[in-house]
Amino acid sequence: MLFGSFLNGYAFWLLLGVALLISEFFIPGLVAVFFGIGALAVGLLTLFGVIDSLAVQLLSFGVISLVALFGLRRHCTRWLKGAVAGRAVEDLDDAGVIGQRVMVLTDFHDGIGDVQLNGAKWDAESSDPLRAGDTAWVIGFSGIVLKVAARTGSAS
Image 1 (cartoon, rainbow, N blue to C red):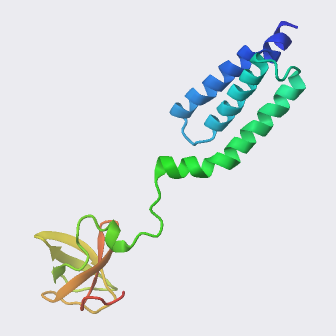
Image 2 (image 1 turned 90 degrees about the vertical axis):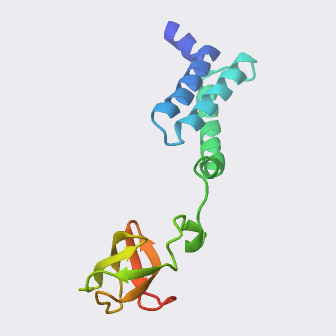
């Protein structure tokens, strides 16, 4: 009966809520925090005598947690992680390489070769038949591989 009274008490819900909120720091996924909010809400409602029975507490915990999870998660995820969807490639080009002229160092075989940009050798891809000594322009990149074309503005 001691466990039943502890489970039915506000202290259990408040401790569970705090534990779930703290667990989010160690296992981030932006899920436990909403169940922590649900547990804290049930603990406060129990403390102030709004809800009393264990069945109502469990039901309230489930409903509040799920409403918080599905209602707030999208907003919190966007706030915590930021939104970059829809940005132009030029906005993502922090190094300023798009549109730069490069010197082709090796002949391109199967669309793959090496170019020189700002004194450094880069791996590159191109749909154009490029030969060593040609000039090309950077039209994009994928990780550390440059996408180049024989003429500026060409699509590969």
